[in-house]
Length: 254
Image (cartoon, rainbow, N blue to C red; front, side, top):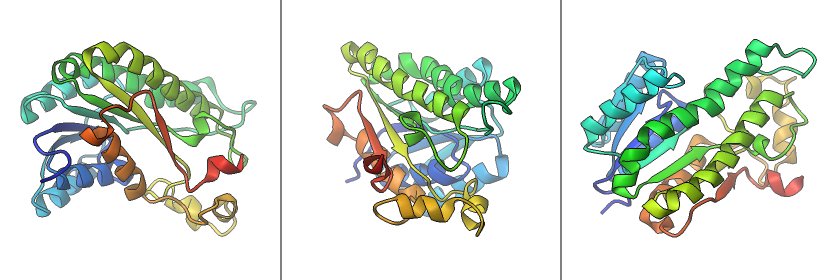
């Protein structure tokens, strides 16, 4: 018996990294996963991996859920495919970096739209379904949402993820009467297709980040996916408004 047997789990950004790992873990535990991504080929690869492991998954791609129409269309289609919405994992994001005196307003808006607005839009669309199922939301934050980063200027990213964590707490309060649980996970540096070039760069910040991490390694997508699985499952039935750092102890260093 799986930890998510019979549950409809919606995951944004399932084309790779944390989203792909989450889809695989949730499907393994008995969920019917419905994903989405901007990249059709990567999305199809994840669906194939899940189905090859005898899991259930559908996905819509290419689809931009950082727009009102895209978010609403995906949620309604996903609810139809899976028979409702029991769990929503807000994972998808896109970032542009730059120091405060060099980051353009367009890059700031791009980051906030694709890291904070996207969570609001998808959650708002899914809220009526989650109220019917007394469901759960897991938002993927970042340790940058609660601390500064020494290795890269992350003002827009940190502000957006800080907003995600604040939104998580507020939604936990608003969702409580309907039985909706809302939690977050906050990864530190995680090995994904997006971070791989930076971590492979011998002159990049990867080694310094690893040395400042008590467990002396970068995170893996599966590390984050397993924390998401706990918060999505009935094992966390009395957990809401929480944020779990998945950071190898980085937050403990300060």
